[in-house]
Each structure stands twice: as C-alpha cells, then as structure tokens.
Length: 176
Image (cartoon, rainbow, N blue to C red):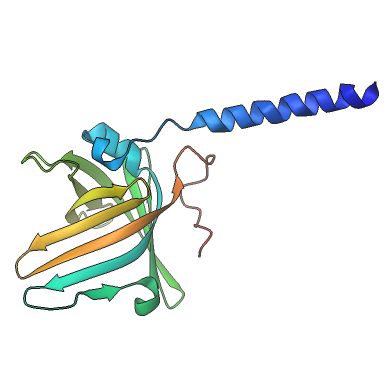
C-alpha cells in the first residue's frame, strides 16, 4: 500500500513537469511562414552561434569559407525580448562583449521572409544594418549581396528563448 501511495505523487509530479515543459513552447513557424516583424522577433529570440561565412567574388570559381576552426574564433549572439542583443566574440580565448539594441523591419520590396536587422551599439551609438532570413528554424542567415561579391553569414540556434527555462541573459553558452 505505501509503495503505491508514494509512487502516485511522484508519477503525478513527473507528468505535471512534462506537460508544463512540452506546452511551454508554442508551435514554431517554418521559415517560409515567417512574414511579420512580430513573427521574426519571436523566431530570433534565444542564443545563436556563428557557424560559417561564405564569400563569393565575381569571377571567382570557388567561394571562400570561414568557420570558427579556420579563423580560431567564436561568435555568440543572444537576442532578448527587450530588444537587446549581447554579442560575445572570442579570439584566442580572449572574449569581447558588445551590447546592442536591435530593431527588425520586414523587406517592403517584396522579399518574402527577408528582414532588415538594425543594431545600435549601446556604448558608441554606431549603427549596423544587415538583411537576414531564416534558412530553417535553427539557422539564421545574414547576407550582403552587392557587386562585386556576395557574403552569407550563418548562425545556428543553440538555445531557443522560453523553451528551455529562463537563464540570465549574460550567462555564457555551454560551448565556451
């Protein structure tokens, strides 16, 4: 009798935890379904890690690939709900943190699923802008496409905001 009385509350507690975790995340949209500023803002929240940069110059047969391994550096970006972005770049085990405010604008010239990311450095007020799109729900691609070259910079999602518990935004990603 005691065994079932003890296991029942544990089972119920486990079931309650599982249900709350599985229901905590809304169904994520696929990249082609992300059309509005609000949808892009929800999709970009979380931690992202630089995966690669591909540069293709006009007249060049093979593109140039840069990765964390070839460049001996890592870049982690954390997009937060309060429109703040923390970028941590680590080169030769020395980290530099830059804080930004960000804004997202959909491409008004008909680029389906394309958005403009405007970053303002909180310390210097320098403004940086870049177009981006979601390649899939876990890959964010920034791109610059003007002659004489095109460049794509890909980031992988390492932790989707809100789905894996709340962490302090300044905490480092496990891969550091």
